[in-house]
Length: 86
Image 1 (cartoon, rainbow, N blue to C red):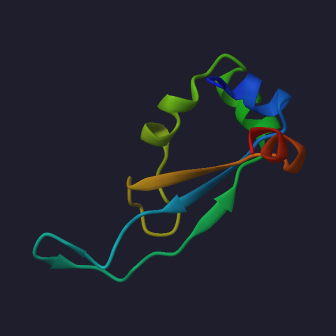
Image 2 (image 1 turned 180 degrees about the vertical axis):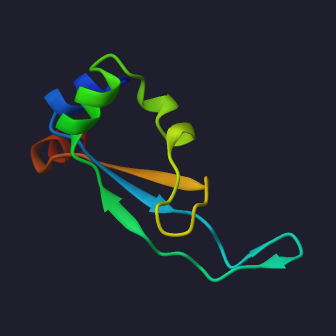
């Protein structure tokens, strides 16, 4: 199981953040934000450390376009690791 930024980089994972602000939250309507960004794992390791847990990453993020704290992370496995899991 991959649990840290260092392990994710060592296995060739890619991490993409997506703003999860929807069109309506409760009684308030918002314009849907569709901002996406693929993180550079090397920079994340320099700023957070290789032992930083992946589970803590979403709570530290904010969409730069709309300011929402509702951010979803998408973890992409390298092609050879996807074939091994299947």
